[in-house]
Figure 1 (cartoon, rainbow, N blue to C red):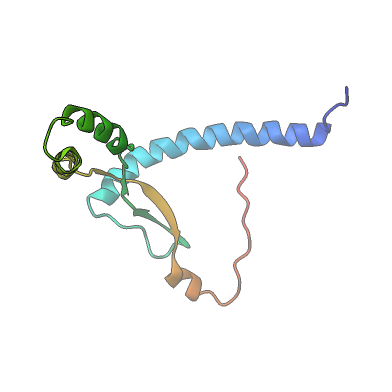
Figure 2: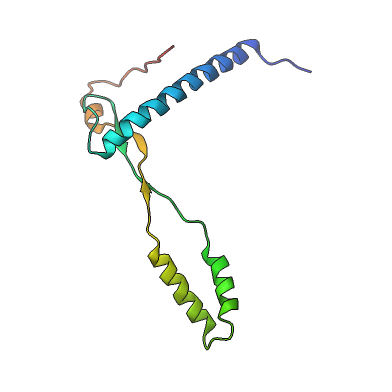
Length: 127
């Protein structure tokens, strides 16, 4: 059986360990920063990237097809079962409120990028 390239394997393992540490710290920072951003705090405009709240709406699963089939069976003896079922689905759908959940996103600070005289150099951070 062929053996994996040792250098690439070591690099992957090192990056995996860094990722795990970074992911843990990012979760801690997100828990601290997101509530502040939701309350109206903003990122410093002197940074190349900004943290912003971009709420995400949670989509309901497609329950209507299933519910319509059940309602049609329930209203089968009605005068117009399709219309009655559709009206009931619409009533239920309107009664549900959409909930947005806050989500932390990193976006490009266009003002910062526009103030640069030349292209920024890539900076690699190492642990």
